[in-house]
Amino acid sequence: MNVADFVIQALTTVRISVAMTLDGLSPEQLTHRPGPESNPVGWLIWHMARMQDRGISAITGEEQLWISGGWHGRYHMDADPNDTGMGHDSTQVAAFAPPDADTLLEHYDAVFQSTRGYLSMRGRDDIDRVIGESAVGQRLLAIVNGNMQHIGQAGYVRGLNEGQIWHPR
Image 1 (tube, rainbow, N blue to C red):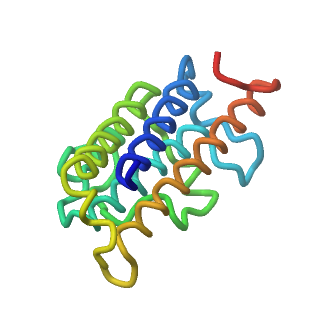
Image 2 (image 1 turned 30 degrees about the vertical axis):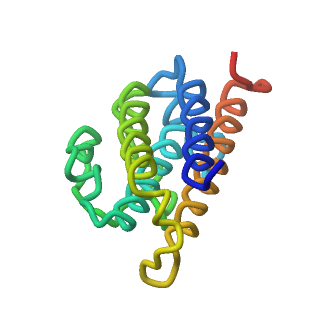
Image 3 (image 1 turned 90 degrees about the vertical axis):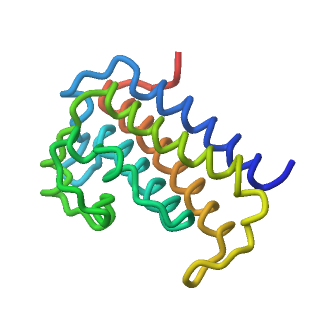
């Protein structure tokens, strides 16, 4: 298996977990924070999609789907390519209001399909290309690592919010 196929398989697994984590959640559940400084499920999923979108955009040189796909409008947010959630303080996290679980999943899917398209066509020969201070492979590793961490956090937060051990049905 080559690196591109591995990344596609890893992110496919994440996508399945995103769908299971969001399944059946109300808008209130998407924004519920188990503690005053905790990130809610909806914010975590949005942040995952934004970070992946920004990372793939940096690799491909194409505009982020956040802007080109109009996703910022669906979230009633600015078309700021730098607003990925990194550095958000507690007030900003509390103010985040995703439209609904379906929109979060559609957004993640759009970004995932963009990533998959890149990896299927160009990623196989592009792993060692350097962009700025890091290689494409390092950026892909950061995307996979971030996705794995954040989907785990989202599942954990869902379980805390529901007051039980949460696992996909």
